[in-house]
Length: 320
Image (tube, rainbow, N blue to C red):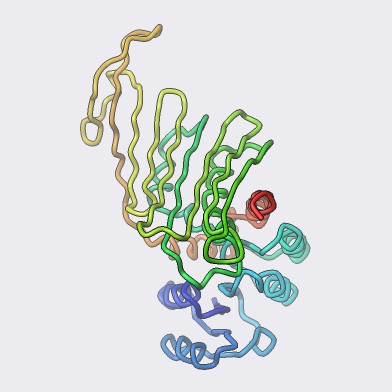
């Protein structure tokens, strides 16, 4: 399968390197208006360089890793040419633009996957073996300032990851959003806090900052009979649970005591499930390939990404 990467910034360079290593893939084209950077990345991986999408011959699939403000036009052009499309998050800069891309994807029948990479984080993937029914979620995503993503606010730059995760974890519609934010170094909010309420009663409290000295990517999920702590940077997963004593697995569960309930005595357990290391971007690339070649369900759909942008836009309006 022939793949092209548009954009040779931080993420585009990573995508190019990992695509070049994927089995059954040829990294055919690199697209970037910066000839020096574009040619350098292309030469490193034996690909051809093109200054624009219009100048590039058709390939099977395209990764869009250009600035967010360009996602809309590029995605529509890629889809109209009949190529499958992987779009780095967020899908577009606005909800209206995202709806355009969603409509185009459905019209042409091509795979569109969006790069909400935290879905592939090893800690998040370890949740596949956990019954997750959140009642309250708290997330902190803090990062040092980097000038490469200032075309959007911290909401579209960082918080969008956690917006996608909570939408996915709850599987419920958003009924209310409250938010506050401050523009410190740029013209858009650099720090933001949002409180999101869902139809099923779950409440999520999200904080994102791109002006901190000490990075943090953590999420805590509270629900009946268990508390889940995810360290998305480490990565790691910790669980505190109430279980029947006979269900204890001593290989990774530590008993902390017992609690008398109306159903009898239950054990309080600290659990550290295994979190096998994986490269999350390489994994999302493989999922994209599986959807194209084998018809597998799309890992992060354009519709899901469009909803994440809608919520992000609501938050931005409250903080601007």
